[in-house]
Image 1 (cartoon, rainbow, N blue to C red):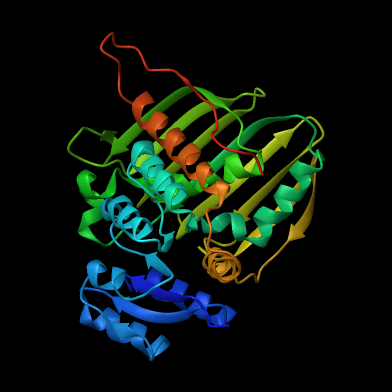
Image 2 (cartoon, helix red, strand yellow):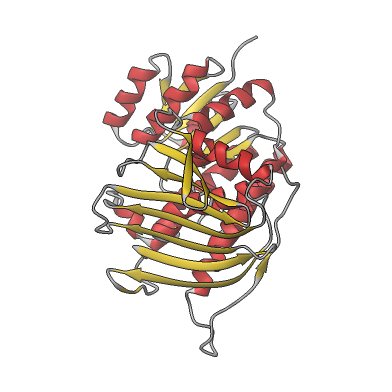
Length: 347
């Protein structure tokens, strides 16, 4: 049987990396490439010399494709994904799926109506370290989890101007990095309801306004089972290393964490804690970067129909929306508080 024909919309570094991961599975064929940069398109062609270079998304939609991989600026994701799905073509999109929960929900609804596969590159849940934590938590090995600490500090920050334009990005470091932390949290704990938000967003050390995007975000909220969550993320934080990435969980029967090693963006280990002792569960190396993309490609080859787990993308976006809202005073001067109940079936 022929393999699904896939187009790649946006072939910068991340787009090419995901293309290579998908092609390595042998499950799909790279049939089309579209990028406004001829240099990026040429580099993509070196990976997929049989693909045809096209000038626009519209041209791709008329190119007899089974799937399109979207790696464009965030503000374009929802519109491009909906257009693709309405043409009966499956979508793999870079995060975030939308600039807010409403955009994400519109994309998911388009995928449901078209009965087409939809997934987002929330790649950290595919690390061996995250999977080790998932096993512990699913087995109840930590007892009642009463606290979780989530951190993602990137010492560099984005190098594309659109990241700093709220209309194009939807926000700053929270939607760029915090989306991974929120996804990890909800996925690891079974997508519980979330409530009682408090947050602060800073831009260059001062409270961020409506015309700038945050480069430091801190939030606290509570899960339905009483778990207190603390989340912090930033761009260009002087942390003494390239990155600080960590997801830690503390329970009545012990603790566990996954964290990056020596400031690396790629190397993670997972540890289990008991009192003052620790056990290494997973250590590098672990080539995890393209696993989400590879999983989508393999699923597309088996069955390109709608996956109900796409509903979870709306849950993640809704938590980010509430963090942004909690950082803004209400008309009465108090912070807004609410509860988020997950949508769709649980895993």
